[in-house]
Amino acid sequence: MDIPAVQTEREEITSEKMAQTNPLPVPMGPWKITVYDQENFQGRRMEFSASCANIMECGFDNIRSIKVECGAWIGYEHTSFCGQQFVLERGEYPRWDAWSGSNAYHIERLMSFRPICSALLLQNHKESKLIIFEKENFIGRQWEICDDYPSLQAMGWGNNEVGSMKVQCGSWVAYQYPGYRGYQYILECDHHGGEYKHWREWGSHAQTFQIQSMRRIQQ
Image (tube, rainbow, N blue to C red; front, side, top):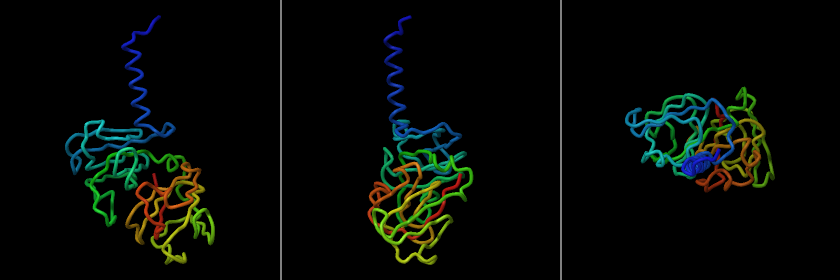
């Protein structure tokens, strides 16, 4: 039986839309996040179980509060998963400073987000493993990390910079300053093959080798 042209066109548009909002191959998982266009969970709300590359396509001008019910997510300052990154673990975020934390940078905009698949696939975040290197391209002194470190220097790392990293298991968030402050860089074992050869691969907002604290991302 012939399919009406109108129906075919509608299916093509839907498929194109899904490709835009789910640019990465994401396995099915119990992810759930609710976003609001006003602070303190007020105003318009929408629930998502997959990536969103541009919240404006959903009629929002910005995301101002968030509830993460299942899974860990990355929020981005700009559309198309660009700009500053913010790790979003299970819990409530009534306003922008709840997810930016002690960021030291006043960023109230959050325009795209996606689930962190490697955090979900790991049964126990204690199995997370990461190797940091003194120089780019995995050269120089190296150190295997399997725990949270509020200060790499206090635990014996020689300086305030990390040249490159290999994520062997799980997902991590690295911070520019001690005490989990400053820019956030989400590092995943299923992105770049888990290999981050240079600070340019940490995110579109990265500008320096400076990393002084790290922790595992939890579901």
